Length: 248
Image (cartoon, rainbow, N blue to C red; front, top):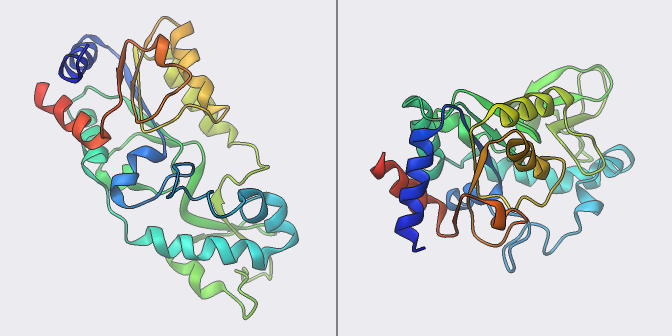
């Protein structure tokens, strides 16, 4: 099966599907200039151990060290814009061919691209909340909260944490329940830019398949579901999704 045939088969699946959900990971945001986590040479975790900077214990026990990593990430993500792959999914939703996007990404680019139904199962970098009183701050206001030690402090004196899921934390229950329900009802789960290796999100394709739905995968590199996918495309996510739109 060549690539064009694969795109044509994916287009046919979308036309036939009554309910389609997209599941996205870091790979869809790479064309926007946001490195993924594990790619050789560019991955975020290649030069730093995430357990030493992005773990909830680090935030609780050494917030200055935590923010020395996360504060630059706030700045790095603030000027990033959606790429054509994000916009393609928003376009599919606009055309009534996509019900929702479930994303592992914290970068908010799906919403910026115009997607209306977005479930952010790993949280969002758009806000931060006080660990003591629960007050929430927009991302643009967090920079003004840093003290001379480089720690973001709430007006109450408590430590402010980005509203993202850190290592050692559970995923937000409400978001995961919604994602599970969407995938269970889906006739087609379109997985884009995700290695499908990080649980519990990596279990969502099994939810769709167990309920009788189909799985399609558009991502570089192998995934555990390749043999089970109705369509498997491994080209550039922008090129693949733009080709898909041209066929619909």
